[in-house]
Image 1 (cartoon, rainbow, N blue to C red):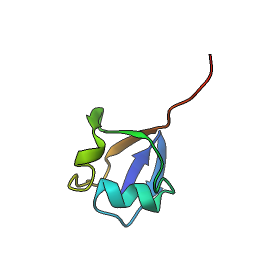
Image 2: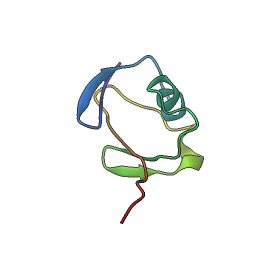
Image 3: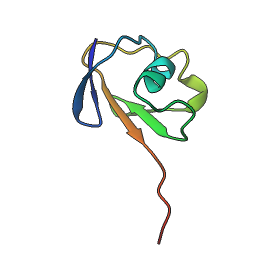
Length: 65
């Protein structure tokens, strides 16, 4: 299915957010996620289905000052 990931079109095979993160190379990474502008907590990723055309935002924390 085609989804937007951080404003870039991606073709993925995963149906669920937790699987998509692994497929996109974020396995084990500490990131924040949102689908279509709605925050998805880590505890809800496994059951959160993705739909064709969804907009997925993946944000990694940054350190610095």
